Length: 219
Image 1 (cartoon, rainbow, N blue to C red):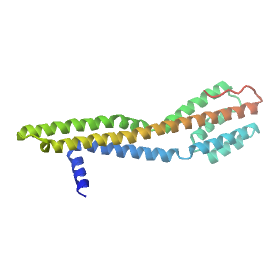
Image 2: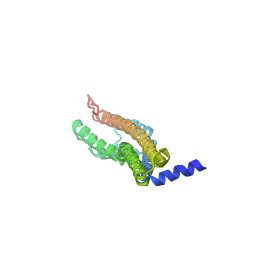
Image 3: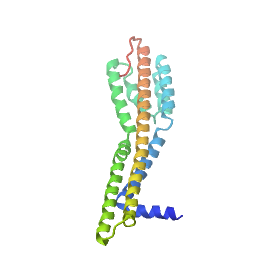
Image 4: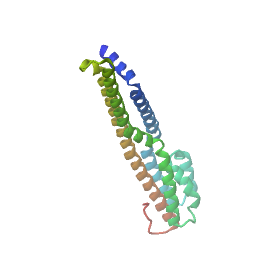
């Protein structure tokens, strides 16, 4: 119990570094939780709707394709892309259809990245905030030693402990934030690939519907 009280006391003493770091950790975890909830089950649902859209378009059932997307996928990034492309199925050239689809894909990807940059910023800044606390803590320890005219480890122990707590907390927050940021980068790349595949399936279906050949892949 004494160790816990001492640790909390050290956090309070180094408030100029430890409080911002605690706030950063709360912000990073809150953003991560919100994005995890927002991105849940997107991959399997988009894969499923991509397969269904191709089936409908190859049969020439444009209205059936639209009804399926509005019913099952209107809340999905890929579903919103399909709804934007659907009115252009009949007569828009394939190159223009691909360009339009890619533009909407970029917009949807940017929306999925919302606030992720904050996690990366926290991961980069937290060690420097901890270092700031370390420097200030050591400065305070030596200032106290100069004021009292006393020396020895006992005089500077509190300041050094305060400095080390700031360093450790900064590194801990940074490690968690960087790990979360890297996870989301990989996750978003996977979702981007899934959307590209879904767009390719859509264009394949359009080509089959029109009786065209030479379907192209989305870059």
